[in-house]
Length: 187
Image (cartoon, rainbow, N blue to C red; front, side):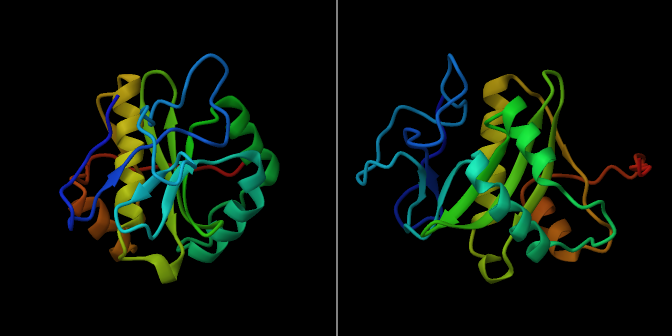
C-alpha cells in the first residue's frame, strides 16, 4: 500500500509507520506503509516538515470539536458531540485523519467507509493554515484510504455558498453533480 512521493521542492508527502494511536486490532491503518521517518515518530510528514498527518484518537476529540467550531462555515448544522465522535472512533478508528503542528490540530477530514461507499465529511482547516497544502494532503490521505479499502468513488457535500471549499474540490478533481441534492431532517 503506497502513498505518494514527489520530487524535492514539490509540495508532497510520504506515509510513515504509525506511532499512535494503535491500529485496529489485527491490522495496521490502511493509509500507512512500512516506511520509517528520520524522527522515528511514525506519522505522515509534509516534505517541508510544517505539519504531520495521522489517525485521530479519543484524546483528540475536544481539540477536534474546538477546531470544527473555529473552521466552520455553516453554523446552521447540528452541533457535534463528544459522544458522537467517540462512537465514530470506536466503530472505525481510522476514519478521522488529522493534521497537526507541534501537537495542535490544524485540520481534519472524516473519511467514512461503510463497506460499499465512501464519504468525506468535516474537511476543516484552521483559518491561519488555509492555502498551505493541509486540505490537499488530508484529501489525498482519505483517497488513499478509500483505494486501499477497495472503494471506487468518493463523495462530499459542499455548501453552495462556500467558494473556497468549491475551489478546493474542483482543484482536487471532484465534479459537482447537479442532479443530486442533499435532504436533511433534524431528529
